[in-house]
Amino acid sequence: MKVLVFGGSGMVGQGVLRECLAAPDVSQVTVVGRTSLEQVHSKLQQLVCSDLMMLDTRESELRGFDACFFCLGVSSSGMSEAAYRHITYEVTLAVASLLSRLNQNMTFVYISGAGTDSSEQGSSMWARVKGKTENDLQKLPFSGLYLFRPGIIQPLHGIKSKTPAYQRFYTLANPLLSLIRCVFPSAIVTTEDVGKAMLNAARQNDSRVVVEAKEIIRLARKP
Image 1 (cartoon, rainbow, N blue to C red):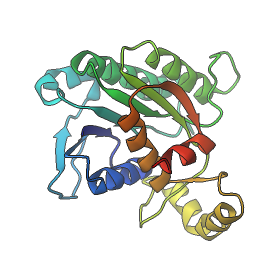
Image 2: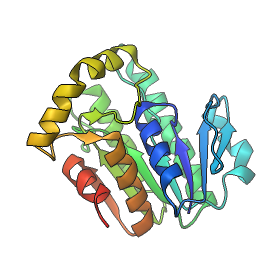
Image 3: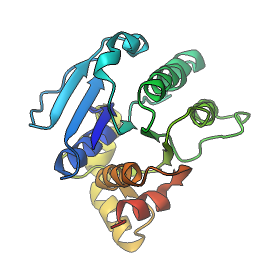
Image 4: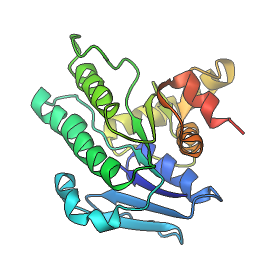
């Protein structure tokens, strides 16, 4: 299996990349982003593009993939709706539309969020934008489409968030998050859960579904 990873330098993307590189049935992982990663691995390739809205100029490097794990995203905190919509909706749909045209049998897995507003009518700006993104992704002709809606994600294996405030939270809260996971196993997903669930989604490649936190954990543990 050949996979694309967008947002490989972010916390979720780091976890997904780790699981992809460890998976024996993944032969190639191409990370797409505006800057290169320092990581080196025999399976890892990198496609650096300073403007993802211009990714169509790199079509030849985006063909022949079985799955795309789209982990690119930003916090809406302090952002205008127009700026947040550009990154969350416009960039995502531009990339997804291009990939669906180039790879007819592709599974596309998108990191959305718990509380996403599918009606696109609610008062929460980020939830409306995420809802429109999910709705329009479902119109594209992917072989499989999975819309992941995790809530709290616990980073494992030394993975860190690029957002300083989030990283401070995880540094302080990680022991508590581990305790909560022991008592309530379906309450919190980990970066490992997300990565393994994405891979299993790509392996089955036959659904177009919204995947909430409990289902992410269940999918991660699927044999």
